[in-house]
Length: 213
Image (cartoon, rainbow, N blue to C red; front, side):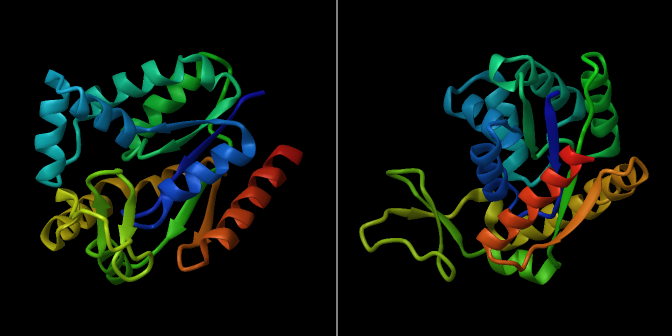
């Protein structure tokens, strides 16, 4: 039976980092809307131009566009054993669409880990985040300093004003997912202030318990 995990939490909570670790440990596919969007931006597609404009303004990509992209991604061969979904669903409507996609294959969301982090911690994390334009590697000026030779640039969606706008969007649109998945018995909360390795261990233990159950 395939396993599907939905990562939930505010921007900067570490969902992407933990998703990558879970993918490696569990042998699942990493389904990241961010990766899908960036690929289109990098290839300068018409979709990429629309997505770039929306992301730089801190606005969410419309549901119908995102759902179509994710549905196509979940049908790819590397998703046969399941997937860790990172950045999708962002709203209860998207969550319902995901349930519908999976139900057609006799599948479901097995666990929805919620990585909790307060707004001030999110702002501190994201406004210090930067990328080396040569390598594409992400650093943090305080928590993960870049090497001296790095050619740094701030991501447009990590400016202070945009981060606050993203948090407003999160509280309005994404936080209701907590009730959605709690009602379905798959929500489990984790402390976003834990170390990366400790959080990974806690997540793996939770997945193991679900599989045993």
